[in-house]
Image (cartoon, rainbow, N blue to C red; front, side, top):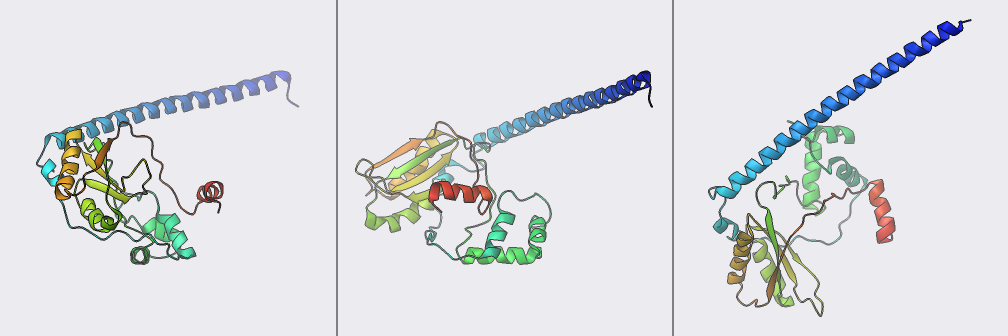
Length: 250
C-alpha cells in the first residue's frame, strides 16, 4: 500500500504532466492561429491585387464586351423530371466543392462504388435528362473586381417574354435572367442581373439591352448595397428533409 508521501508525489507528477500538455497545446494553438492569420492576410492581399488589376485593365474585358450580346439559347426546362435512388446518391456524393486534384471525381466515385468514368457518364446523362444543369466553377465576382451589380427589371408583355427573355439573357454582362410574377403594384415581368466594375458599367449593359428593345418603355434598375452570407443548399440530406417538412409540407 502506498504511503501518503508516495500518493502526494504521484499526484504532483500527474499534475505536472497535465500542465505540460496543456501548455504545449496552448502554444501549438497560438502558433496555428498566427499562421492562419498570416495566410488570411496574404489571401486578402492577393484578392485586392487581382481586383485592382481587373479593374484597371480593359484588355481583360471591356465594358463594350460586357454590353455585347452573344448567342441566345432556349430557356431551361423546369418541369419535374423522374429520378431514382442512384441519382440521389450521385447528387449527395458530388454536390458541394470538388477537390482541386488531378482526378476530382475519384473520391466520389469510390464512395458510390463505381469508376470515375462511369460517374462522369452518369452526370452527363443527368444533364440530358434535365436533372442537372451543368457542372461549373463559381466565380466570386466581388473578389475578381466586379463589385457592382444592378438588377434590371422590365415590363414585358406576356406574349413577348419567350422572344425577349433569351435575347436579354445572351448579354455577356448578364449572369441571371428570370421571368417573375407581376402584381398590381409591380408590373415588371423579367429580371436581369448585370455585373460590372462600377455602377456605370452595369448601366451600360442594361442600356444596351434597352437599345435593342426600344418597345419596352417601362424599366428600372435595383442596385445592391449589401451582400449577405450565402449558404449553398445541399439536397437529399437530413437537413434538407427537415426543411421540407417544416416549410414545404413534405
